[in-house]
Image (cartoon, rainbow, N blue to C red; front, side, top):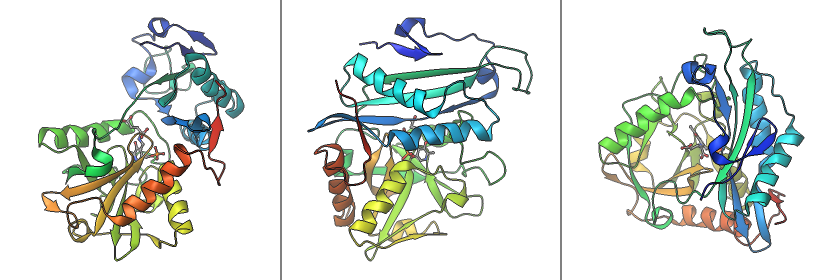
Length: 303
Ligand code: PPE
């Protein structure tokens, strides 16, 4: 099933949402994007933390001196409409701003900024059963990019060249995902997820100053942990702490909260989803499945 795409202000059929091969973004990676989930809650179809995602999109654009043709309100409205028109239920929304066709060369300032928003179904990111069974991962031989190289607060297309090296290496080695260390050797994140360690009931995760993406699911988990009286520490975590963790999990829009059951063939805890991970998953599901929404994270689409 192919769904209409919102492209530069209009809905167009999937096959008509095309770009020119000389678009700046194709040659130089000059795009910024978001990934957002819509959930089929018991109270209706709703988009999860839409405002925060579009804000991050516009922050990413600002970092790259990219003038968005549309403001927050219009992009939010179009994201809602894309779900209401398509009648999609649980799905994934992908807004993107990119530099289009114009002068060739690194300077993007004279290339037009194009905007698209697509939506489609997207199931579990790291495999069926991953939420219960957990996944097997490796520490990547690739580092996360260093501060003041690529700005990590921007979710930019070009950043994902680093991510895809990590992902390909992991898959070819028989793992589902790779964990990156910073250039100083501390834990950073996965190719498309943030990372949490649980040890003695405390959560540990990298700070956003470590060139990780400031994940919206990461911030949800930190909030839920606070409510559940689970302490959270952001800081430098050495690689070997992965091997001594009681529990480990990834967070992300696509990955949601996915337990990790082994890293570099070290079994995490007793090799099963642990109680802290399970508790946080349940709190998350209470929002996105039951529609119990104390933080006003859901935007109902009204289909
Ligand atoms: N780190 C990275 C590098 C990342 O790409 C994501 C999202 C996260 C952390 C988690 O951020 P958040 O979604 O705000 O909780 N990765 C998106 C893209 C995945 C893809 O393969 O494409 C996503 O989860 O939508």
